[in-house]
Length: 85
Image (cartoon, rainbow, N blue to C red; front, top):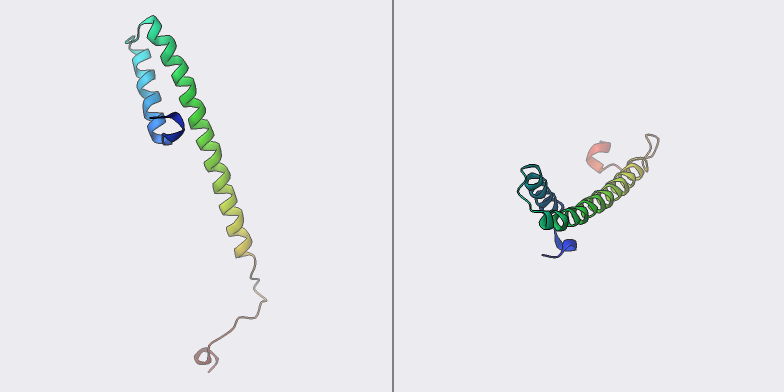
């Protein structure tokens, strides 16, 4: 699976597996180097996804704030005929 097609959760799970192998001395010297490089790529992917998600959430919340403040308490509200009676 290509890096850019992994979900955040998949990348994080893979990163945790690499860290676990490193902590338990399960990697040879050559494999350690390649796994460390791979871990760096996974970290970058996770950071990028978090940054993108944070930006999207902020944008959504800003839009929500604008729509909530679009109606002030002094604005006239259209009432149905039943409400007016």
